[in-house]
Length: 269
Image 1 (tube, rainbow, N blue to C red):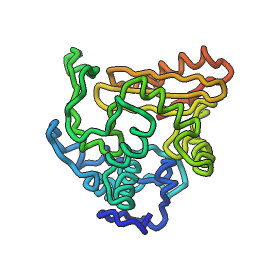
Image 2: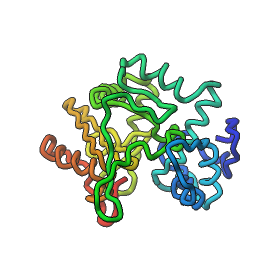
Image 3: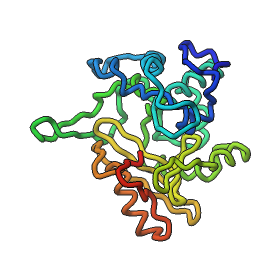
């Protein structure tokens, strides 16, 4: 990774590969769990460069040496976004639009640069301190998410995308072979590789931010897919509300391939 001009110094970069970033095996600290992040008073208009969040993350002690374990951290995705911009001399937004959104006809998908949402759109909710529901839509600035999850879409487009991505329509054969070469995470029947999760033959992953939680999975053995979206971000029941819905549907649809068979005491995310 040290050969890229990133505009931010990453300790031990010479021993961290792009593959390890994609596999969530870099060991780098989660940028959204840093003291600096916790102290920020975020507003919808807040603008924060991804490099700043990366700086906060790499100032913390890594979880482990590169490629020793698995740990999902958004820092990896933020660095991958900076690498994309360094190599292409273009924005992540433009690269995703030109290479993926337009060629696959994802007409309701975009990489936003403002808080504006296309109508109609689903609002997200959370419980306040008095256990009353409140609308928390658009409380997270898009610059905060960046290449770690700054995307808008609908369920029809996500169905198209997950089937194309897992089905090998997006990559060349050699890359697709590597994409499907997922690595066990060490927790139950979960595996992960090249930004793709796998469990019991189901491929995809989950996503979340305040007010929203999604789970998008495809089972290529019999061309089955599940797209579960919830206007609430909640980690309980484990492994997250959207993944729990997906798990319960999948165990009916594919009883011999039940995803998220967890190690006791772990979350699976």
